[in-house]
Length: 72
Image (tube, rainbow, N blue to C red):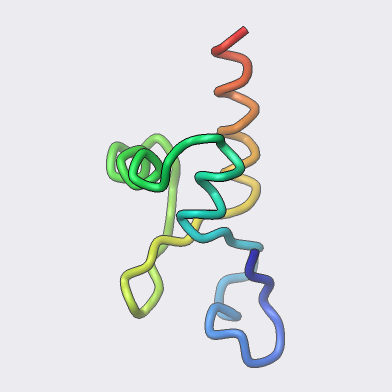
């Protein structure tokens, strides 16, 4: 998990972010599925200067809860 503080390269983002792998882990899916969902617009993401996707923690938790509801 990346928090905006000190010399963090993502400090211009004023929310907590998760990497693709971290977000996928929270959702119980593979990183490749996470990337597919981002491309499909199922979850919003931003990219850093290296092209890495970053997902808002709140968005990930909201999607996790929605997926759990779908599976009930």
